[in-house]
Length: 147
Image (cartoon, rainbow, N blue to C red; front, side, top):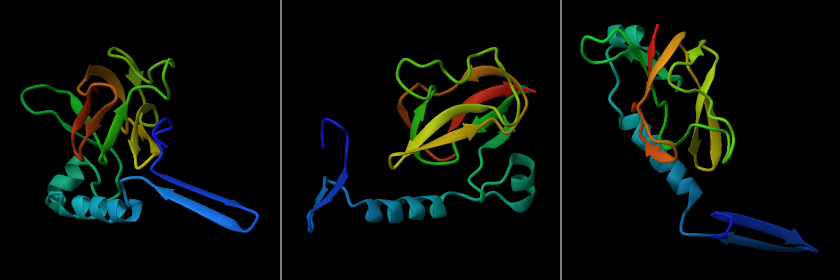
């Protein structure tokens, strides 16, 4: 289980069933993450309309802080940020790349599920704000995009 980074394994053969769980109760973790998301600050309706839909879990593109005219793509969930679909594969986007709203910009792994994150905006990537293979939190800035 350690070698393959598994937390849960089930095997059923000839009427016998073997279930192995390692250090984590995935149902309890799912409940904890749901509670964390429910406790995340929710913007007022006018602010939510201006910055994106926090309720849907979609990436949120909002104006960056300061005088910059860039938008930010923020993490819609807690997980691990990956710039490519796997080790040794090409990254989804680089600084200077032009993206459309449907362009996949990264993957966030949450509870062993790989979630493709779309840009949700069109423009040029000006900054990648998060290191590859690092944990991210809900609402954390992942990219800056100049429309």
